[in-house]
Image (cartoon, rainbow, N blue to C red; front, side, top):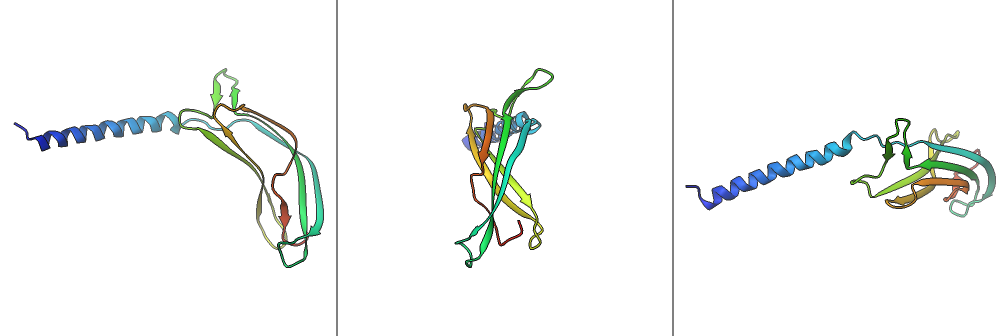
Length: 145
């Protein structure tokens, strides 16, 4: 007859095996899911101003002002009539951001975040923004933007 510790050990090992199988099953349900949706971004207006930069050594810096349109549908219907959604049991919120990359003579690669938004599950999945201004200042160090 087995002791209490032997039975507890076998019960614990079986529980770990079941939990590992369930964890792998959860991984498989979302691992190979396509998580891209069609997005259209159009820049409608770009302005460049040379303004006083109070954060630096007192020189003037370039300030970029950008207006853009974004059209995205988080929940859309594919051509094969399957409903495709980024949200599932494992995704509660999406962090969306629009960034710009540019190069100057001083820096080969500059990156700046222009706009961001958090979409929670249950919010309107259609994102239609017209003539949006950049949410954050687009300053470049010095001139030549």
